[in-house]
Image 1 (cartoon, one colour):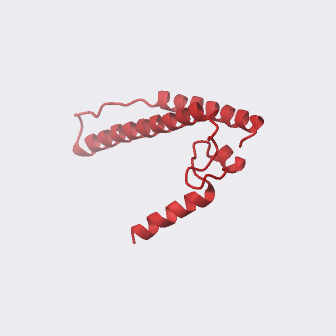
Image 2 (tube, helix red, strand yellow; image 1 turned 45 degrees about the vertical axis):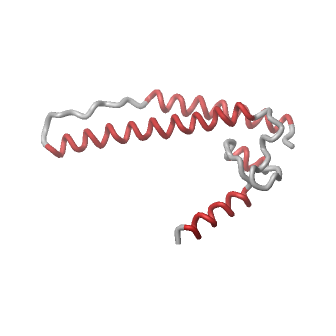
Image 3 (tube, helix red, strand yellow; image 1 turned 180 degrees about the vertical axis):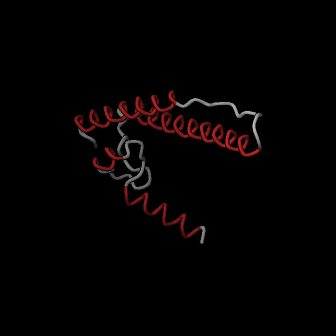
Length: 118
């Protein structure tokens, strides 16, 4: 079980990360692709528009993950691995506060994925 001080550190870290991600998200402007210029100009414009949309989607997803974790921070099972039921190391939670798996469980999952795709 996490100590109150650790929960507060993790909560503060998550709130700061949400604010940073939100700032990044707000700074991205999607410029509609232009229909003027040659095909290279139009392709570059379309690529830029697509890249901006993808970045906004990634940032929005990350913000959502952090908000979900923040909503769970006071739950008794926050910081408990969903696979093993063992506590997740505080260092790991400070590095990846949205994690739901211990390092061991994450490594096992990644190993299973690699073996599946061989």
